[in-house]
Length: 385
Image 1: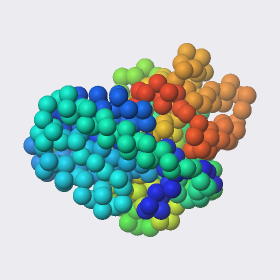
Image 2: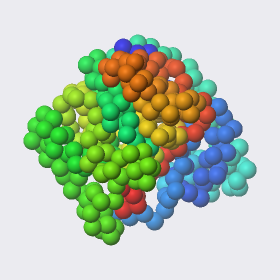
Image 3: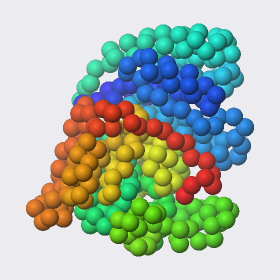
Image 4: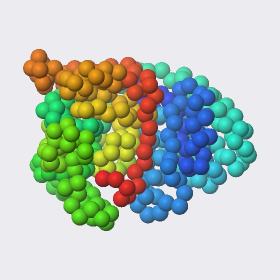
């Protein structure tokens, strides 16, 4: 069990913040000022918000609604230009039982008045949600996303396997784990399919790969498998996408694959266990998907170092690279670099990570929370792979 914040839908947050969500790029500045004015809030901005169509429009709706409904969010303030857009998002959030308020620039009139009004609403909401106390919650209500970035030679043989062992420990205790980054399982998709509990889950993994490859072709990349790994991955010693993928999938542990969901779709762990979300590989886009899917915590392994995190989903930074652990102690919540020096086993490293997961779930801060360096990025189709 862990001590979390109970929600009306039966879920539980490991944080209890108010989300300041900008619905349009033209009010991002106003939303940012409101969030800066009130402690206990986290900012979610949108690079677009108008004139998106088709798949891009659908992904944006799912992303914003999903992030608003994340259990770590105790209340939501939607900042927008006009009332129509606010109503589109506010109604389903309110219907799900979560507090939501709208700050509409064209109705309030003027930047300063809008900031003033939003600040007052935010202060009231933070004061209200701060009255919710932590209580015992079952680990079956905890969903952890697993991520990697800045991968190098150490990722597949130390950091990712250790994170995978921690993932197994969490699932054995009743929790759930979500692996993401579709392009980074290319070359290992057959291994994922072999772990599937049924034919549908196996087929869904293969289909997710095929859909990502088709998006690449539509964008003018005939063979995405030749476009990876990235420059920093190559610098870190990785030679092919398949080599990277074989290391990347290890962070998801070894349990059976229960199901596959699309980008930003809710992860409903029935039964609890191992799931896959089809997302782009860039970390901020992938973590946005995990947050929208309901993950309350993220385990993030990095080889060369990677500073990104999600603003309201605590992101535990891990590395198995001794040089990275030495050079970036302010970035790493857990070092398992002593796996490579032979001082501890992968299992012992995984136990170390698992203990940190429980501590963060119970309220321990991560470095990225302390620095406030998290951000959300909603993907658009064809923009990145």
